[in-house]
Length: 325
Image (cartoon, rainbow, N blue to C red):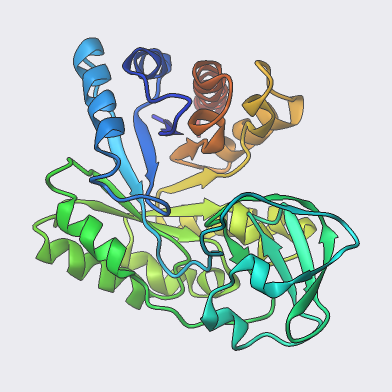
């Protein structure tokens, strides 16, 4: 049966909201640990456990690690970037590992590509696509390969606490090779979490290229279209998604599809026709699970989002069965 995941956040952290999401069909929930620790997320986890107790329904806890992801630093306040203006790179508080390798002409995608700047000098950049930049948002540098450890120290501390907080599954971001997953498995084993499943997020070209080699070290492949779409021209993304799906089916590997599945529902109670078709087609391609992120974490309609996600996925599953697939 197709599994539907939401994401914990301020919009759905009340037990009564989570109860409705569980009754709508949510069987797993993602907790993003890019900005906080498991101990800091204890209130959200307690709300989830209370919702489980009130409904009698089980919900898997999937934690999303920091991993080798580049992020800007902490900003004093949100930064308004206006298209066409020149800004100082110091404003962005970029990681040293990235600044050391950049040269004029390098483009930087900020906050999952919502904003775009191009370096015009050693310390200056031109804003090509503006918007409001918040602290700790992602930064991608197309064409550059920055070597970072698979696990941060914060990741390792969260893994040490995973058993205490009832973590069922761990998502490893920006998987580059089998070695990244083996490092995660070793850390889980050392923490007494040998039964925790590993979800390998494919969100860069290196992960796509090494997909077959890394599969034996993963339990589930995640087609993470956010940063994967930053790693290539967007018009190439659908083809790459199809290719990953095909390899997973061929190898008998479960896979999950995520990112902007119901993006418009952050502010609208009804999805677009394109979004419901996207969910339907992901299931037809063989997805074992689908997931929403900001739609339930910070959106206005978390319960309606989960209802649409589960109903669309269920309709696609029925269609597959009718066709004998």
